[in-house]
Length: 566
Image (cartoon, rainbow, N blue to C red; front, top):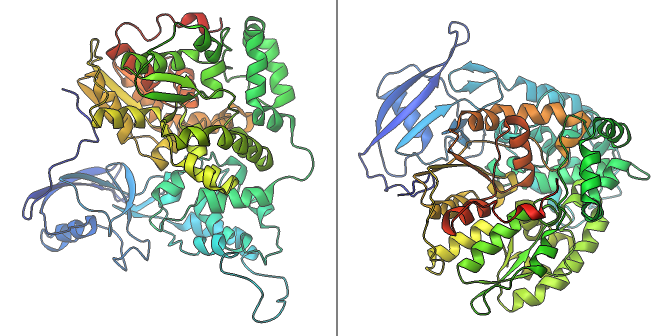
């Protein structure tokens, strides 16, 4: 029986015992934290804060924690609940909970954290928190729509959840909360201050990895990355021609297509120490980072030459991303083999262009808009026919879903955005509806899943765990991670390499190293898989490969090596 960390628990009844484990630590006397467990009777609609109140008021325990408003307005009661940042006043209790202080902050005592660094950072930006331009008159000629992005950031309650969840926060980057404060002014169209440069030069904005974890945990539901971070990045964009590295990464699809034509030579050069030093010198790509290998036979060419699949059955269109096409065709082959074995007719989104995420990451919004318009024109007729459009790379799928409606403000863009699914979403949904009926023939013992940042923020890992449960594994569990540290091209960059490794070493890499050799490591993101292999020598596989191996039989690598570069 497959076990899942996402299986819905039985509803808690009034009077049921809640097992509450609290991390207690007083740095003035304790050398390390201790964990105390308490039993608390459940009351109707009980929140974590109420459970803590019971421990102090009814059990007479000494326990330090903070709150003021109790209604998600003051931001004082931020805590970690089972490894996740949340507000104690708003978080429903679970049958078993472990409470810890917010990660990434010094502890004053028990669940109370020292927020002084945040206030120091804000003070560094303080002189910029004022409007220096003269008022044009009163009332000023401005609409509510023009102030929408700036106003959204005014809902910040300074709870520090986003700072705690940010894998890049540290000496180099102030973290998202100070950026939100700065964005209140920067995104006001009346503002003339150079706040984008301040965010970059004082706040370290360039070190943001774009993982969206700040947006995921924000209790005020501010789209922190989309408004504050991206808004400030646009303001901080350097004038003049982009750097060589920026142009290289923004146009990675063309680079990959050309490299695949000369895969053997390109892979030899990429593995050469001399060439890696030259690449580091010219492009500032860290030579310690292994370069991905080009496929000799790209996925789309393999797809065109393979034996045709079923002529009947539900049609599924695969949006084959750059990395599946030119670097890891085995992922696309496994997805194709699995879907066809289950009776689906698989076709490709022929003529599709790069999703645009690399361009957006490098600040080239105009080029991203061009490829988005092309893809919307290609995919809209497919969406209108009700044909599922399925992507294998979370960043690509979620760029289409999250960014296209803003880049291309048309009904077709919204239609396509609402119609594209991740591979795991599609498989889980079809199985739930009773249409996906393959049975496991080669179940793994255990699967550990590392969730992609964009996947966790926009969808959650529930569909991935549900889909992997179809393998018949005895245990499917999620590694409690934030960002793997790669963040697309960010982990390749010289100035970010060390930070990317530090982020991975917090939870991800130790968990992978501790896993049994028989345990499958699952990761949908190509950058995540690269980081895992680089840091542990373990090979993480895409869920499509693991499902193919279990449900179709045999190794997911079998028959795919012809497509992989040497």
